[in-house]
Image (cartoon, rainbow over all chains, first blue to last red; front, side, top):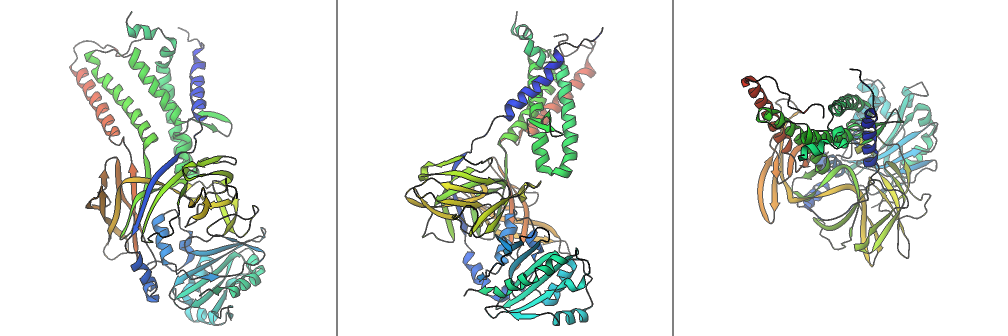
Amino acid sequence: MKYQLGSQWFFYPACFLAVATAMAGCEKEPLKRHYTEVFIDAQKQERANNDADPHASLQQMMPQDEIHANLNMRDMGLQQGLDASVVKTPLSWETPKEWAEKTGSGMRLATFVSLDEKHPVETTIISLGGEAGGDAANVTRWMRQIQIEVPPAEELEDFISRQERLTSVSNLPVLMVDLTSFQNQPDSPSMIAAIIEREGATIFVKMNGSRQAVLENRGRFKALVQSIKVNE
Amino acid sequence: MNLRQKLRGIKLIRSFASIKLTVCCLLLLFILTIWGTVAQVHSGLYLAQQRYFQSFLFLALGFIPFPGGQSVMWLLFVNLISVALIRLVYKWRHAGIIIIHLGLLLFLFSGYITLRWSKESFISLYNGQSTNVSTAYHDWEISVWEKNADGDPLKITREVTAMDAEGLHPGQGLGFDGSGFRLTVEEFYKNCDAYMGEGNQGDVLNAHGIGKLTPLALDREPEKNIPGGIFHIQTKKGDKILLYGGESKPTAFKAGGGEHEIMLRLKRYPLPITLKLVEFMREYHPGTDTARSFKSRVSVEVKEATREKLISMNNPLRYKDYTFYQASFSVDNSGRESSTIAVVKNAGRFLPYVSTFVTFSGLLINFMIALNSRKGYEPPFVENV
């Protein structure tokens, strides 16, 4: 018996589309909800007391670097932990004119982006408790982040000793670490960082971008670092 | 003419009971399963689920309407109901087929219950912290409460009025009439960056000094999208408030004769219990820093009665429709550990087990009947309907 296409073969696609379109067109109104929210932190005072002790952060279970600031901050447990580890230094600074300041989050007190879209740089300010690993450890980690071969310990110490040292407006000692000298290509990912030491905390300021962009913004970076002030 | 014969006379029901529709639906489910599985590599699990399995319709290749998983499963459900109404032969020798049919209907029903009413969220607590709400993974709300100037910093109790931030668009009004004010959405972005200082909107109220939002493309991982918006408060003064999902504290403002705090934050779901993390415990594999197991000793308060319970990786806490699983943990710089507990609310969590049992029973009964049958084959369906 010959199978004849009747009107039925239109039926199924029409059915699908009709049901689907009708349901897809239903727009939800915002729901209004009422609830009582209770949050108790019985040990908050104890934690606040411990944070005042600069030695409380010496036992470090996570690397003291801003790599972890890039972790998914929607893990609220992680965010709470990272927020608690940050020493809430009351800092202020002057944003360079050609940079825009984004809101800080988690470990980052501030993030700046350059307005130059052709040669963009991103700069972050992080404050961590204690010595935060030491200069050599931090410089080593930064070199690895931008794929620079880490020199032997003696050469590394020599490199660090030759870096520029200055003071901020609130007389905090600043070590500028310029890694652009290790690279030749203008497009190589590069970095200039600053380590600012204060009592009980270390402030890291780090600028990332291509070598060319980083060198073009070196002056603005230095101005930002020197403007950092502790508001006691 | 009995009822079944009358129903067989209705062309629409005959069409819905067609075996061709069943085959069509199964074929579409097969295509959607493969398509969605492959798509999640690029789109991410959440977006692939929403587009291919939870939607009614989506545009394939950008312009071809294609039925989504919900449409297909609804049609399959209607198809099975129609078959049950006019085509199944209700005799004892076909009991197995009828029970299998019922099991399939239960499967689809349980899927709908889970889709429509189940909620997943989480709680993250340090030792000694308690809460009675869980937090959504990537749904947002605008929450408002009265500012309590003399509040105890160790205990926060708020009466919150919240509205879902899903689908907000410019011009939309949000009525917090109980608090005496309304908001109008001026700008809203599902994902954006926030910048300090003065922005295009002039002075806006914001707890962190954010003045400008710039929209960003949606990330395929929904938890990376941080929304933000600017809202006009409908008062004589007509303040504007900027809310950004990445903020850690609320913005205070005056309206309706009182002082309020408002925040754009991940949605909170009230729980029927207050959960306190008494102690988080972690064991390592010997000689390594890899966690072998971790568990949370919690205190569960229900109507002023408290009991302690241990939540570990294969030992969740169950209370009414809620299940609390030990999901993860984190360690801060000073070694303090916090525990993250996944919370699943699913009223229909037993239905898949019931469906499986029913379908398996039908199969077993059908095979037993077939093995013991002395009569010839008799089809379980009415043909040529």
